[in-house]
Image (cartoon, rainbow, N blue to C red; front, top):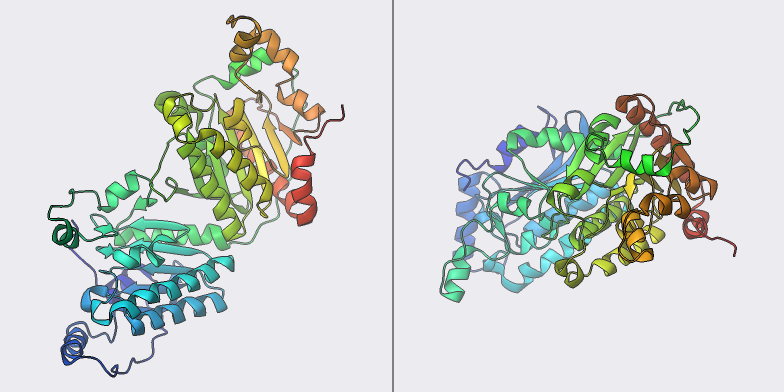
Length: 491
């Protein structure tokens, strides 16, 4: 459990550039018609904290980036939200939207202010509506969940961030342990509502100390707000016409770079996101906000290595993909999907978890999203797990990448009564190679893998940026139509 709790003013001083904070708060008059006991509570809270409410709002800079800041003061009636507090939060969110500022919220609250009852409880709807409008304007919303963040605050504006991180040891949850014990007569399981546990389960993206918050916030804002830069033209060489089976074996080599190295070497900046934000995380999928060759984007990709060592992608992994698609839509950023999978999970858990339905919903989301979409076939492209990330405005393939309805061994087993030895022949016949798919117009650009992985990743980053520019220049209606039409084949 966190022991050193910063006040709102201390967090502002820790996170924002020195001297940059400008308060937006106006004095809150003493509310009328309240009980003497509540009036006394307010007087004591004001005297103890030096604040007139449980939240401070304003604007400042984080490593030079302008930002709006909403910070709870837990010392003021446990950071609880009543009508006046909600008014201040909503006003700040709407001002941030009007001024086109990214917004960082740092709640620390027990939830609804019980002294004001149901009317206070209902204010969470107003705050949520303001956050929705801010996000619909394509503006970043970052959340730092401090110790403690509970109840209606966590269940509204505390759970809507594009990026959500928690304070180390912070108690974060829906129902407080004391309330649970009083209502249910037993102790709530220890450790469940800690920030570290929520991060491990994909509810939040990371656990970050107050001292490190500025770094991740500035990095994220830099990616999300930087304008696109003119890109260089990628140099290339003729694609080698290698035997298909050689290419398949090449994509299965353990040292072949995957999505994580691609983000490390091909992106100038990347902020990884963790899980679905809905309680699931599978390591076979990586989601990140990234800056690639001067272009900001959302990247969602399959981690081939994690799939081989920790299990193939299942329905939860595809729900992580759908989170990335949603973020691209909300942030109005291009989306880059990276395909590199030996195949989706074949298991009871996957079937009962709705794997097929999630593949279908990924296809729908990609076909409908209004963001420019570029798909990268990085290596293995096997089955429905690969298909789920394919619909795009532009499709890039690495030289040895391939795409097939099943691993070639599986196709051989189907057609030859369980015999997998026909896999190399079937791979040729099925036209799974990048060169074959380029001839059919499925792939727009094939990137040579060259003589070194470093050179390949550098060239790939340039091509990704170029293809994002091409996709972005296509009118939206044409883009949406052509995502499915590109696969049409005349009989």
